[in-house]
Image 1: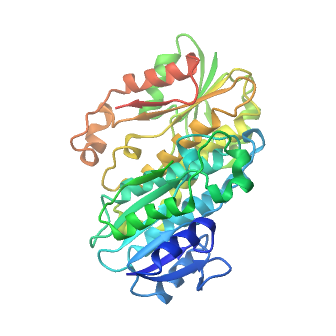
Image 2: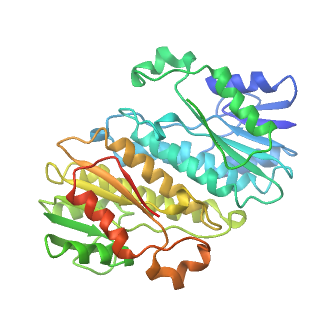
Image 3: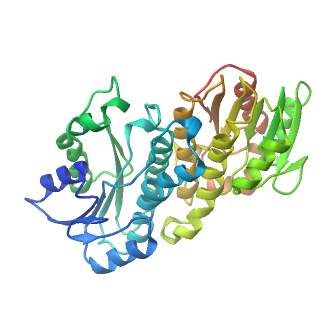
Length: 199
Length: 199
């Protein structure tokens, strides 16, 4: 399969690319590095990506920014980061991409454990994650041409414990490799409308 | 208690107002009619509402628009309606209102059954509903001054069967009165972080 991994240079994305590259043609897309540059907060950039990368069988998104901060200081403007990037950015990869990718192709998006199991400073990210998960479940029943869609909701990564562990006290970190398996299951399998909780 | 019902002129909102008005001081807020005019898609309008209506104990939101349409025709622009209104509008009622309403006060927002049980043409609404529900669960663990927050997720209403029944074939409509009880439980009770599914 020809697979584009949007956010393929990040911690999860790199593990996904590593897992896929022996058996598939993988294109790493990212905002600033990788094989192809795309900004998911721009409709023009997303459309251009699909035009520039024809014949795609699977789109994997392991990207999307959110602002982390105390709720009592969270401004509507800070909340826009998750709205524009993690939520709308990923949803627009599907709304636009459904008209471009190959018949029988798939989308796999990314949510996160805080949508189910909230953490301090995580309200904006939780909002985006919950929106992505419900969108995926709903989009799955309507996609045409045999297209499929799933979402992976990872716990905090073992690889990111030093950076993010303080936000996730008492959570059980999972390896990026285990999380990457969920993306493989989605892209290489036949399921649709699933939320893969790697907790 | 002094309670503002944003969207208090709609089908659910009217039932909520009816249920609350004998025991509470209820202010009906709405975009075009009611006691007070507010546009939840405008930060300025939300801030002005909280300034104009001091000493509020409970904010109930029974409002929020979404575009309903087939996924393969759903444009990012149409998806903005749910983003701006049902999702951001309701979230901003909380982000701004947390600094204004009385100690021990509460917020009760509105989601909808399609976040759990998808319907055709409902992907954009599902997205907004899922975002609102996850935001509420997360915000509940951080609200200060004893503030609480819950969300009601209603099934299609018996009262709206003629208008919306075609979207919800095989669903079991619930009465607006039963749905209104969930808002009463939220505002008059002591629970927080709950998703009241009235299915």
